[in-house]
Image (cartoon, rainbow, N blue to C red; front, side, top):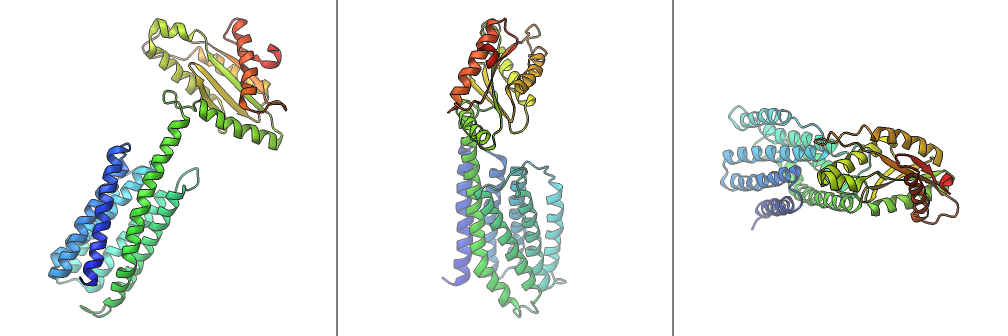
Length: 382
């Protein structure tokens, strides 16, 4: 088997393996849109490399047109998938119209009026620009790269460099064979490595996203979308360490809905779930970025307010308490919610979150005993 056959077999095999791997990932790990789009991208890649082999061995320009169209569609789908994953606005016309223009330009280049330079320049230049835009879309907002994202980003940049190098070497083509050696050398040495690297790192991104989803599910309450008890405990350990390190106050609020059991018994779990979700959203909206909200169990929630004294935390919760009464439950217009709050502040002797929770629970008990629908600070309760 000669070198071109080995090279094209490797590229086809990579596309085939990626198509199977991403199909399995899409079927079994959430059926995310971008994974399906990437699956289609590598599926088109199989057709593209098959057409390339037919064009090379059969010496047929028509197959090279199919190859070029496949490259454009495959690259566009890869870019679309990255855009979908980022959650940024997606305008298909921004991909379809340039692709049609490039395909028409490629067909013209292969025709009698075209040139060898145009044939070698058009596709790499377009794919390079497309992948550069994809790398920009991959850049995360409001956070740093995860390790899988970073290696995928670097693979895309390397792919861009190879495509631009191919486009540059195409400028040196002077005839049917003259000047093509550099183009073929760049393609044969770098293209398989970069194609495989992009494929492998794309799988790493999918796996990394799945791992992040699992970590999020382990630490978050599925009903209210706030932290669960495990997530709250982990956040508390970090918050307590930071407060001690920087000599800052830290307040813990434990709160629950007054009469929640009666609400469940009288109106059913649908009303109870709506109340919990509405209360959790109210708490989340009331605190600052960096503060922590978690569901401790049942209708009981815990809040960690950073750099906040017990008195200041009580002021924040007073606003929440007044708003709870205006919380509407769809389908249950006769339901009026109330809530009670217990507040404690980090003390020098506190070792773990349970120390804070014990005092906040005592304060919450005092608030319930005094008539509910109120806020109690532990010092006052004691």
